[in-house]
Amino acid sequence: MPKVNYKIFDNINKIDKKDWDNVFGDIPESYPFYKTLGDSELPEFTFFYLVIYRDGQIVLIAPFFSTDFNLDIAVEGWVSKVIKFIRNFFLRFLVLKTLFCGTPFGEYGVLGIRQDCQGDPSLIPLLLAGTKDLAVKINAPLIIFKDFLKQSTLFLDALTQQGYSKVESFPTVLLNLNFVSFEDYLKSLGSSTRKSFKKKLKQAQIRGKIEVKSVQEIEGQVDQIVKLYENTYREGLTKFERLTKKFFLQVAHDLYPHTHFFLYYVDGKLAAFNLCFVYPDLLIDKFIGLDYDISNYFNLYFVSWAFNIRWCIDNSLHCYHPGQTDYEPKIRLGGQLIPLYAYLKHKNILFNFLLKLLIPFLKPDSYDKDIRKQKHV
Image (cartoon, rainbow, N blue to C red; front, side):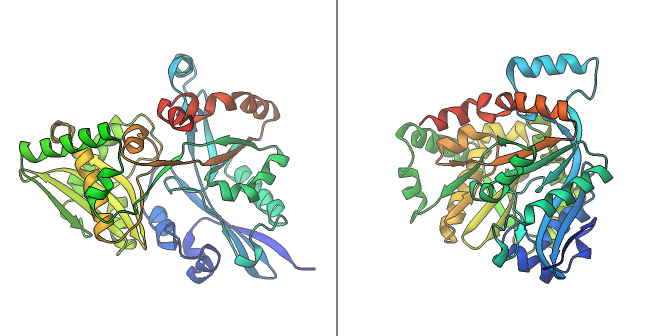
């Protein structure tokens, strides 16, 4: 009978990188990625790692983080107005300290499971026990397994037998770029989208001099980058994480050579940046920052999209991940929605029952017309 147990660590440095790589393999959300998160002093988040052992050997690693979470993050319309009204009297209404399994801003949730243990249902009880212990320890009444791909649900659906509710998350977006040139990509778009896109790019060229620089060292420009990021953070409807200056410096250092900052200068002034991660056959578009007084006039969102597509084609990358939210332009420009799923459970039986009743209102397509439209194509 094998001996199985688990341990919970509050720092990734307590896990050997070789052990980590053994269970996660070669994926973008790698050991240096989580190390960057832990070292960046992100004020909203505290990070943990649940490690399951079998006969002393690591067979599973689950990354966790805790934060205050607004349950209405996906809610718009009249429901959002009602919640905001109630918060005039109860400030933390539907705001709960939450333990998440996953990452704050990974493309999707990933569990590290040793190859010969993939899909082993006997790991679920230990995963649940460790998760519950950690939630109690940090006094987090809500647990969420965040943003998992459909193939992961084959393993995680067992959570529903333990009182967890399964719900659709905001999908991510993927473009498959099997094109020989940018013109070839343009031909794949609908005629009206292609015409509009080309018009925006031409307008940008006429209105001023736009120069794009690809850099991996940003120390000299970091203050400007943070300012641009803060602009988009304030404008965004869906707010989850707030990045720090230290994060941008840390990610440039720890994730080198995968980190690329594409900097957009208009008539010599830095007006936008795009932080991307480059991996074999894959470009991940993580964050964008814009000077809206300049970027709207020069269509820099579309200029940056065109640059990223060209960059992928020129560097023989066939997959482009532009991320979650802001779906309308991404879908029009060729993006495909990739469904993601979450599992959630509250420690209070009554509250957990109410969560199940709320699930139809928490579905992203209940409020995002672009997701709903795409599902019915």
